[in-house]
Image (cartoon, rainbow, N blue to C red; front, side):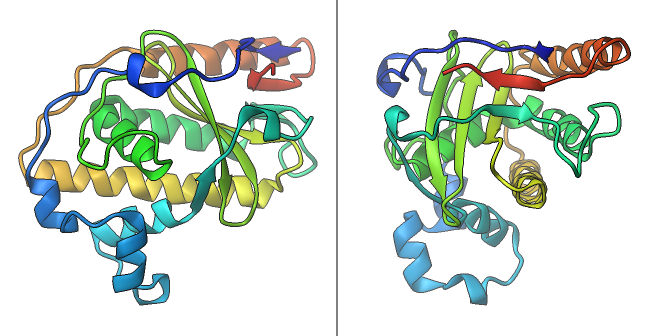
Amino acid sequence: MCFDCPTIAKPRNVSGNFKNRQKISIFKKLFGGQTKESSQEAKPEDKLDGSRGDIILNFQHSIKKSIEWDELKNVEFAMWLPCDDDKTFRTSTIAEKWTIIYSLTKDYWSFITADLLKTLKLVDEKTFRLGLPDNFQAFAFLTTDDEQVILSLSQEKGIRFHFAEITPFKYRVAFMDNFISYCNAWKSIIELNNGEKDENLGFEDWWLLTHKTSMTVEEKEPLTGVGKIVK
């Protein structure tokens, strides 16, 4: 059985589905207005010094480019899929990491949403905060290691990544660890600069209910996935 398996259409244009929020000047000071490309030229990845800004850049550099929906491989994509190294949801390392991610993104989702979509070159570089869409939206991208991932966004379920079933378990874990560091860096930067927290939309509660329900279901029958994308 699969828990939370929405059927989605090909992603629509970003501009008509997201509400731009206020622009924060502190980020120009922190990043110097650099794009992903210009920052790579000025400071290669092997010279990153571990600062909060560099942690954010490190995650940005892990994303290669957005891809068209029809370029996705004919495999399953989900927040969690069972595999030899992660057989049950109840004991899943991935599930634990999702709980951490939701605890971080619930207060800073507008900054993270804007930055992710800027990294994918789907919104203007000057956008520093962006509202989550009312309706479910999804965007496919390729990592620098040529792994396909789907980013989904919604007010109900928050910011999610759906990994291909053929993506190695260790890679999924490493990607999520990188994203957790990225979220923590945003949290620190915003707090240090007395930035305004986002409204609590309740999507962490959605995840906690999903987590609890999935474990209950798994007691009776094997789970085939959680947060699965049906293309």
